[in-house]
Amino acid sequence: MSTPESIEPFRVEIPDGQLQDLRARLANTRWPEDDLPGDDWSAGIPSGYLRELAEYWRTEYDWRQHEASLNSHPQFTCEIEGQRIHFLHVRSADPDAIALILTHGWPGSVVEFLDVIEPLSRKFHLVIPSMPGYGFSTPLSGSGWDLSRVAKAFAELMARLGYSCYGAQGGDWGAGISLELGRIDPEHVLGVHVNMLGTVAPEEPTAEEKERLAKNKRYFRELSGYRDIQRTRPRTLGYGLHDSPVGQLAWIAEKFHDWTDCVARPEEAVDRDRMLTNITLYWLTGSAGSSARLYYETDGGMRPPRELSVPLGVAVFAHDIVLPIRSVAQRQLPTITRWSEFGHGGHFAALEQPALLTEEMLAFFGSLG
Image 1 (cartoon, rainbow, N blue to C red):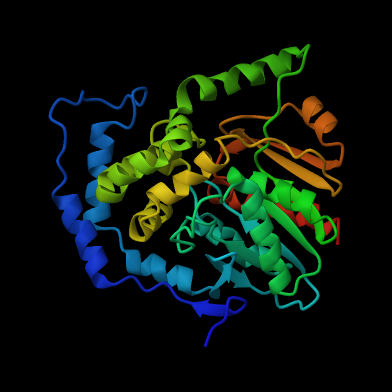
Image 2: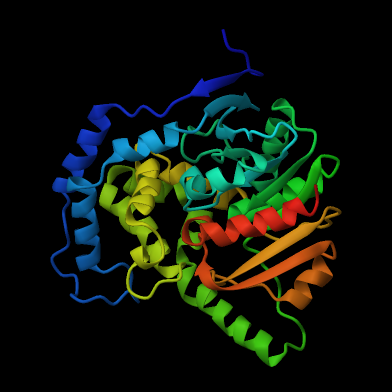
């Protein structure tokens, strides 16, 4: 019999009926008749691309193949504060290896990290949780699961796993949670590494900083509408995405276009099947509304911690949605010990540039061991 403190083995085993229902819904999609033709993404995901992607999802994409890939790694669940937490736990062959907790964001999942598990696990024990309300960490146990509470739950998870010393890494919400872990658990967190960091504008920006700030403005002016909806009405949005796989597909695939290092199609930056596995996970777990709720609970904002005493590494990928200003970051967070800038890659670093991100983590955390 399991107890609230117990950690239970887990396998992904989606019933055939759910996959058949997905294909049937895709086949019966009610497509708009008045959509303008062409490949222009300025008003949202183009109809031609979405129809093609939906048809591939329905007729060629093989969930079972990717389910097996997930199940090739040890997975577990436990209960923390009444909330089910799902996580991958891949132990290194080196018993003295440092532990790392890798945290995804929205619209990501544990799928983001599949390509970095093998190289990282040579040197590190890896804990890769699904955030509350995401993936198999559903359903949400109640309200109040903001960024700070998620970080506290993950600190408890690492303690239950017996890790008295660990590193934390993440991007998007995962960056905020990793920074918060460093703030609230400095006795155990060896260091924090992030591949997204928000900063305010400097009072007198240099020419280079002005160029970076101009790029950041596009996100706030044009690409952040999803955030306002999820921050204010996650429940209403969830009904539509929960009922329509094409709606869920469009909502997330658009972000893989707008936020990655691609020109015409997301597949230029990320593998199509990896992207669809991530999206399928949202669909099969019915987590559209519960994942969006983190924006509501945290009021859509992710700010640097008030203080951080542990070493911090920052990786900046040129095509991320917002780019930090180094001079500001180092004033806000004086414990920054590593700052790396890359000309390729975007928001989903572990998917787009797994080798670069792996090298970054090995260099940063390896220097702290």
